[in-house]
Length: 248
Length: 248
DNA sequence: CCTAAGCCCTGATTTCGATCAACGTTCAGC
DNA sequence: GCTGAACGTTGATCGAAATCAGGGCTTAGG
Image 1 (cartoon, protein in one colour):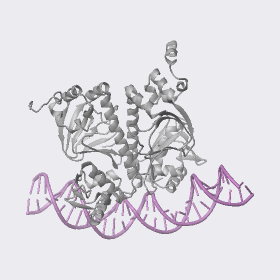
Image 2 (cartoon, chains in turn blue, yellow, brown, cyan):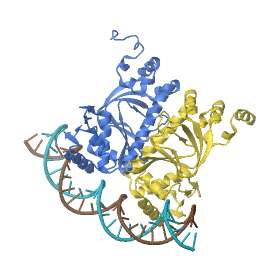
Image 3 (cartoon, chains in turn blue, yellow, purple, red):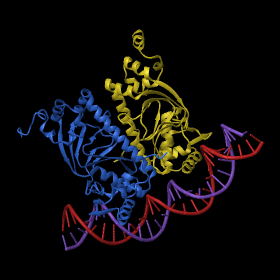
Image 4 (cartoon, helix red, strand yellow):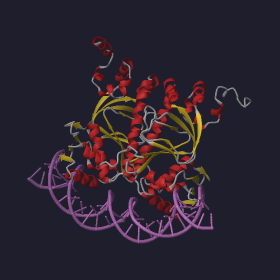
């Protein structure tokens, strides 16, 4: 164990050594001493699908890095209508800085593993490390871009386009490329049909019908309800509705 | 005390003295010397309704504070379908930090006045003033909250609820209270019916019908197509669909 | 084993909002 | 004055997706 430590990683906590959040996540912004300080207060959790991580209007007492799995962020109306307003994948940072209470719900969509930190530790780091704030800021802006992208999907795309767009987004986030040349992809849907419908603002029946339709047309293959193979991403992309590029 | 403040404000550029952005906007984070430095590079513009401020996929060479008026942020599909993904009011900060190219369109919805800064000035300030970054960060998070709030509206509300929600949002942003006790409000709609429909993901005909319906039911009064009076905000709120509070 | 619950698919019917169409008003320009 | 364009309203019709309903598959538990 000590043998594997080389000069460069000498200050880095063992737990963080192989952590993805240290590379692409917010921890990548931290110097070894700050990282060590944070690691001392961190704790890892494995969470079952369906477990609520943050309740709406609940006090937020910790922040987390998503290490694996998918977390869904939801908002609900009082009559039960629900909308998924975001999905978080590794190594996203989970939690809303600067607010005592969350305005949204966070729930494990799949099995999820988290690396959690007490609120105070994050707040202290934000004071001490501008680079850390910088990273959090960038992630927030990315989430804003994504939210706005989905506003277009929710407001202006048809049901077939919505489902295709969803599959494309998932493929890009967790899909493993089968054959890069053919631009094919394969992945496990991280959520039920009902969840997908809450994400796309349609009903689960419609999601089901559209998936069937894509399967019939040979755009996707489905095994076990969850496992999806996209043989040609291009064909899927063509079903997503005119791509963003404002043709002026 | 008064003397002391006078001494401190002596370093503040004349233009900034009465500027709202210095109070509630991002400039509020700046010390007099930083403010002076920024003011030297700033320029004010008055812009006609309909003028494009930032084009999609266009290089961003300046950032701005909205001093008055309303700016709409839009995204379009290549076949012309359009979605308004955000509205900015004074004293919001306009522009996407960290990205060379904008992914969205910004257009003056009403007459707008801006205080603009060259990209380099903002970037320098972000390096020098953590407090400034902090403010920008907070605004981004607010915009994220708003975007997610609208995702619920777009995905899960009916047309009548969408229009009511829109009126409520406008009233809260630019409405002047007529009678605080009755919680009434009065305002000028900052956009056409077509714009409203692009914001709500419906057609302008539907917007028109829903406004008529609200007028018939005595919830609002409309003069000149633009001027709207809400006699009782409570009645309007009741038409917005179950309010966010996740009643579990 | 059987049963019940959860998830998914599919068919029949309904409905909300889109689409198509017509008309009124205002306003800029000739 | 007239004309055309932009904006808004209203009516008639259509269609995409919701709703309602039923059935199959898998899994957990008695």
